[in-house]
Length: 197
Image 1 (cartoon, one colour):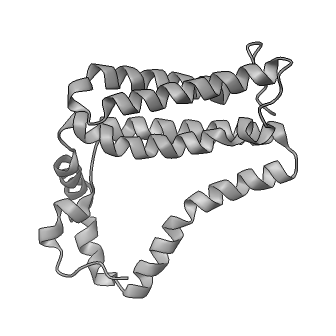
Image 2 (cartoon, helix red, strand yellow; image 1 turned 45 degrees about the horizontal axis):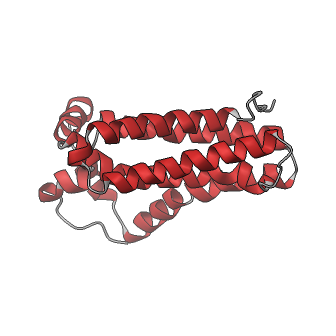
């Protein structure tokens, strides 16, 4: 159940990342004047394309100098870079957020603002526990990848990396469609005590 390289030497994750690079680059070019450091972001994307192309070509030719480790693990780095990039692109391109609409949706669904209502069960220990739990999602994702890599299940590893990369990149597109900072900013005036922990 692995994802094999196409005749051109690219894996499906490579093609996914190249399409994402192209889409984001076109977005940056379209909103060039609004985006701080637009030239730097385009240069970063071009460097990323170059790395993907060189890695794909090297693995499909007699030049196998590109280490297998880089070839298989670089999507994790790209996802991290793409996430950081959202903090620059979304405020520059969208210039508004959906926080108020999401708060109205919360009221319609629950009859309350959930974060304000949850204050009644807020404790320092619970806050710490939930923060640690949330923070472990990246190590958990990486752990599965490390286990598959360690067991030399390369096909399953590539499939897993493709799915994780796809999931993150689609979620980043979701950030563009529904940009929100979160209720801790919008509803700060309704909170009766700070979130401690």
